[in-house]
Image 1: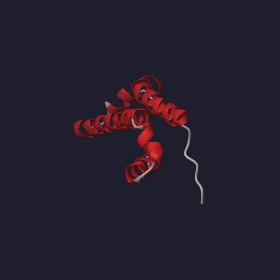
Image 2 (image 1 turned 30 degrees about the vertical axis):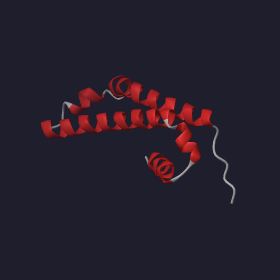
Image 3 (image 1 turned 60 degrees about the horizontal axis):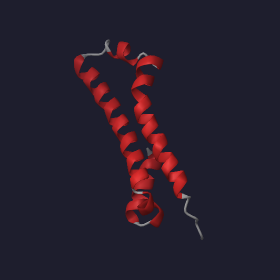
Image 4 (image 1 turned 45 degrees about the vertical axis):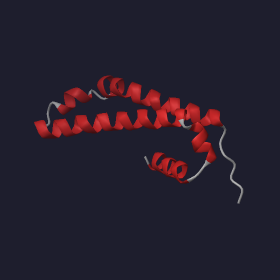
Length: 92
């Protein structure tokens, strides 16, 4: 089976998309979902868990984007780390 690697510009574009998602996430949370007013109704521990999870998602999106942009050659070369990274991002 012959699988062709995607072009590097596609991986870089996807990386910028992930970074854009990370940067726009606070705006969407605040303006679209009115998230901050919703979490005021939670108990303090649950509120902190919700905030931490939001930062976790934002950090993952930013990290995946940065890794895709900076490590595009390594991803195109293949290997176990490229496969592992691709599987993690796909399941995420």
